[in-house]
Length: 192
Image 1 (tube, rainbow, N blue to C red):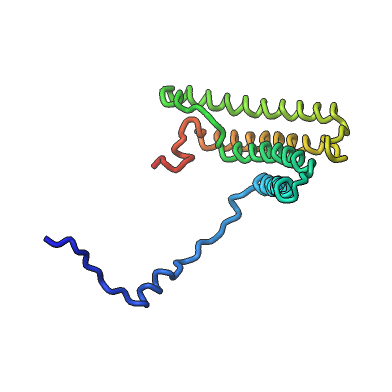
Image 2: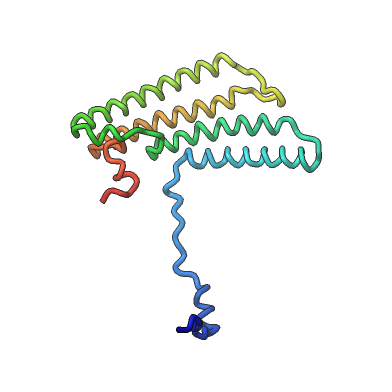
């Protein structure tokens, strides 16, 4: 018995056809919302600040101190604006194991209560951040002469967006009769 492999000769035309592109997929930017674009813009400002910090520290051997502070404050904006994306898409950490063992009516009531608690929490967080912004007033950043309250306006914007998105999600849950907690498969595509 021979272990030699048999190879078929491939023509140049067959090789050329392997590089042909199939139909170019359409790009759909409609799936992204306002907060996605804001978070992306703030992320790129942060990335540029980190790159500038790396370049000045390791290439020029003379670091700009303000780049670290700007990157830190941009990270705050990315986190809170990005959290509103998670609220919109129902992607925050949640425990749905309990709902498998609850009767459907009890699960629905509990899910509705969680929607209301979430709306209340974000509403209260808006109030707290607004009070904090009033307290810090025009306090300046450490390394640059710029007020810190602008940083916390991003936090406020994040909580306002989370509040609005949680109201939107609650209305969607009430209309469709279930939430991601009750039927996670309906949200991740695994439910048939």
